[in-house]
Amino acid sequence: MEAAAEPGNLAGVRHIILVLSGKGGVGKSTISTELALALRHAGKKVGILDVDLCGPSIPRMLRAQGRAVHQCDSGWVPVFVDQEQSISLMSVGFLLEKPDEAVVWRGPKKNALIKQFVSDVAWGQLDYLVVDTPPGTSDEHMATVDALRPYSPLGALVVTTPQAVSVGDVRRELTFCRKTGLRVIGLVENMSGFVCPHCAECTNVFSRGGGEELARHAGVPFLGSVPLDPELTRSLEEGRDFIREFPKSPAFPALSSIAQKILNETPAQLP
Image (cartoon, rainbow, N blue to C red; front, side, top):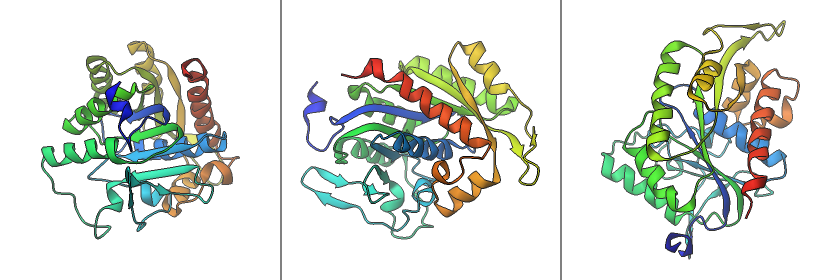
């Protein structure tokens, strides 16, 4: 395919996963970050492409704010998060002069940047590229899916929270995937109960089971429920490696299981 022959593109990336939701505030960036960390701990080389242009939070979650993006012959060099260079990151957050600067752009400018992120970032060899998308089924979604289509993405990880309002919006996201021909790898229910930091009891703050019911109704795999855990929140705020530091957290088995299901998906897809 012609697009795969261009320099500085995604030719060296084996699997592309889009993290989507029809709704904001469900924790797509959290799931993207923890999935990348879990895949890294499974020995994989991972990239994160943060195309949430108006809310680029992943640099903070990985303690990479304020880092500079450099140019090389084949385009932009992504920011390496760790010394081993096993996680690389590209985000509009690295291109803003001030961290609290608002991205007040019209659709065409946003779409042009998304295309540039896909074609001009020199990712090199990666096992997985995790793409964190903005909420909704907007122009940016179409630009992202269209730009990535020549590289045959593995599919979409769709994130919801348990309550009916969120599930209704995410149902529309599943329709978006169907209409654009994007395969759904599975659905994740985030914020599925609150884990008490004192007694570890899990309370269903937002109700429970909406994500699993939606997955069953839509005929897509249900990948797991991730509870709200103060340790997870703290690790994201401080840019720490939750997967390594909090193996006893109730959120840990859920996140590990989601990563394992992604790993199980891919052997058959290997070239």
